[in-house]
Image (tube, rainbow, N blue to C red; front, side, top):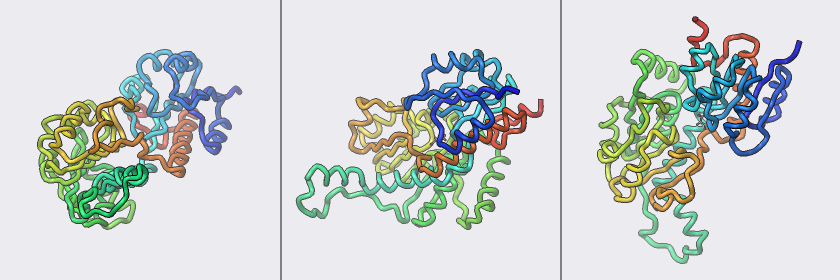
Amino acid sequence: MSLPMVVVTRRLPPKAWNALTAHARVVCWESDCPVTHEWLLEHISEADGLYCLLTDQIDQDVLRVGARLRVVSTMSVGYDHIDIPLCTARSIPVGYTPGILTETTADLAFALLLAAARRIVEGADYVRQGQWVEWKPDLLLGQDIYGATLGIVGFGRIGQAVARRAQGFQMNVLAVRSPGQDREARERSVVNENHDDGSNWSPVTFVDLHTALRESDFVSLHVPLTVRTQHLIGDPELRIMKRSSILINTARGAVVDPAALYHALQQKTIGGAALDVTEPEPLPASHPLLTLQNCLVIPHLGSASTATRSRMADMAVENMIAGLRGDRLPHCVNPEVYSS
Ligand code: DGY
C-alpha cells in the first residue's frame, strides 16, 4: 500500500523527520525562509497531511486546493494562522502543541521583564560602545521588580507559569482572564494547572483589564489572538497605564496596536515595552518602534530553546501520524470534528 503524502513547510529535527518519514512520503520546503504561498499551492493538491509553522497562512486558498487534506498539524501552540472554522467545516482535525512550551515561554516573558526593568540591553550596548569609562550613581537607573505589581492579561497555562515566577520575586499579581473563555473552562484550567504541576503558588487577585492596567508596574500579555483580542491594548488602554509601567508582549503582535504603542512610548506616557512579538512580523529594521530607547524588541523567541523546539516538532509529528491513521489527534484544536 502506498504511503500517504505530507507537505512539510520547514526541515524537521532528525527524530521528528525519521518518525514522520516512517509513516508518510514527505514533500518538504527546503529553504530556511518561510514557505511561499505559491509553493504551498503547487504541492498541497496531492497532500493527505500538512505540517506547518506559525509563519504559514493556512487560508481558504490552501484549504481549497488541498482538497485531499485529512489532517493539519502546526508546530505551535498558537493557531491564528489557520482558518480553523473552515478546517472544522471540512472535518479536518488540526493539531497543535499545547503545554510543552509553557515554561520556556514564561521564562522568556520574565527575561524580558527583567531586561526592560533593569535596562540590561542598554547597559550591554553602553559597554560595547566603549562608553563605560567611570561608575556613576545615576547611570541607567531602572525599576525594582521585587515587590512590584504585575498584571497578567490572559491567565491560561503561560500566564499562570509567569505568575509562579513572579511569586519568587514577591510580586503582587493581578490576573485578567482571557476574553472569550467561558467561566467554567477558565476556572477548570486554573485549578488543573495548579494541581497538575504540584506547585503551591498562592492565588492571585483576579481583576478586570482596566484595573490591571491602572494598578500594575508591569503588564504581561498572554491571550491568544482572536477577533476579541486583536488590538486589545490600544490607545485608551495605554492611557490608563502608569507613566512608569512596562508592557511585555510574548503572545501575538496584533494584540497590541503598534501605532498607539509607538505614540505612548514616544510621548513617555508609559515607561517602556519589551516585545517578543510584533505587528507586522518580522518587524522591518526601519520601523519607528525601533527608534525608541524605551522599546526592546526580540524576534519571536518565546519557545526558542533547543529542547522545547525539538519536543514541539515531535508533538506535531505525533498529531500528524494520528491524523493520517484516522485516529483522534492527541492535541486537537477542533475536537468537534469527531462528534459530527
Ligand atoms: C507558538 O507556538 O505559538 C509560539 O508563539 C512559538 O513561540
